[in-house]
Image (tube, rainbow, N blue to C red; front, top):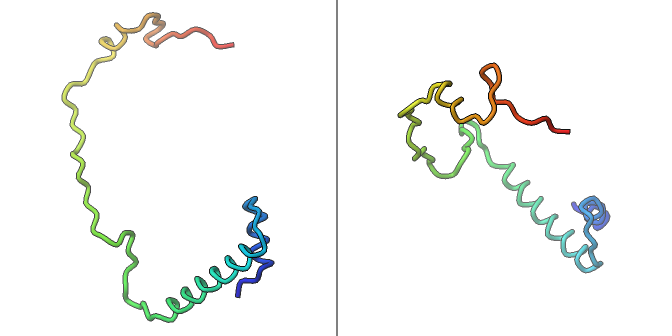
Length: 93
């Protein structure tokens, strides 16, 4: 059972300011949720595989294909400043 003190503690951790009526309401709602979870724990699920998603998920993306691969020399032609085969950049202070 969730008490109002539990709700106040969680609200404090979440930096929420709750009124007394909100604290009472959330205490009841969270208690109802926990009762529902307890009902679900009573169901026998032996032999049932866990589902990562309720619907079948298929990858609709195409495979990556290299159509043209630039050589290092082609790429280095774009370098405004090159040193020993690497891009040279200004020093950052």
